[in-house]
Structure formats: structure tokens, C-alpha cells
Image 1 (cartoon, rainbow, N blue to C red):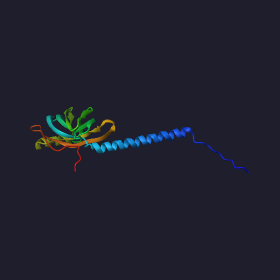
Image 2: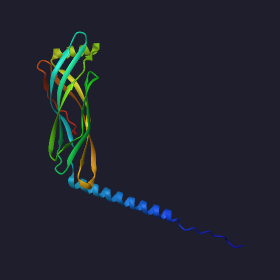
Image 3: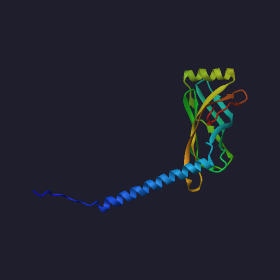
Image 4: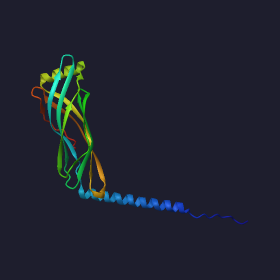
Length: 198
């Protein structure tokens, strides 16, 4: 009894799809190699943000339990890379007192040139803040000790870009304490940076 066989050629559509996938794979691999080589040649340093200075402009509170404060905070954005500009965007910080967020600091996208730094001055003015008994005790103690502490948390998304090589993103985050002397409103300087510590 004769055996029936069936022969079907590969569809042109499948060939086209396979060729397109192969081309895309080659482009992706080539692009990855280019970016890697560019990274090794440029070897960019991670951008850094840090607190450069601050001042307690105003601190008022009354027996009713309402506090008002105004601070000037100076943030430094550094780009130590000698071969690429750095862009900082989505820059946002929270100013916190005794666990309560009392103000937000925000800034639009900005650029820092090669081996340069940019200082940003934030004038932080809070609305009248109702204080609970714990916060009242804390501020009374702070005034007696002549040291009041705020927390600063947040950061910026930084990226460097060089021509057609693409870009690489970095997270620059801060989480630190800002301490002031209520007697003369001065800032008690202490390290606050997004740089990795060894």
C-alpha cells in the first residue's frame, strides 16, 4: 500500500519574522557593546547631592501648641565626571519634625556641567503646625538644650549622557538630620551626602 507523505515549505511570513528578530537581536547586542565600551572609556563617577549649608530663619511656638518655622537649606549637586554632563530631575525632599512632615522641597530638572557643581537654595516656610503634647515636650527640651533637630529625606534622579552612547540613571538619596541652635539660629554642620561611604 503506497505511503502518503506531505511536504510543506516554510511560510515566507515565518522567514521574514525570523530575519527581523535576528536583526533586532544583533542591533541590541551591538548597542550593548557600544554602551559598555563607552562606559569603560568614560568611566563616569556617580553624581552626588549633599547639604552644603542651612540656617534657621524663624522658629516660633506658643503655649497653645502651634509652631511656625522657616529654614534656608542649600543643596549642592556635584558632577565629578570629566567627560559628560549630568542631568538631575525629580528632585524632592521632605522636611520632618518629630515624625511629622512639615514641608516639601521640590526643584525642576537642571543640568550640571562636567566637573562642576550647582548650589540650590531652598527657602522652606511651613504653615502653622499644631503640636501634640509629645511634640510640645520635644520643642521645650530642644530650646532648653539649645539644639533643635529636623529630618531631611528625599533625593534626585541623576543621569549622564554622552552623544549616541545613551544614558545611565543613578539614584541620589539623602536621609539625614539637620541640627540648629535656637538661640542664634545657626546651623550645626554635619555630613549629609548621597555619596557611598566606604
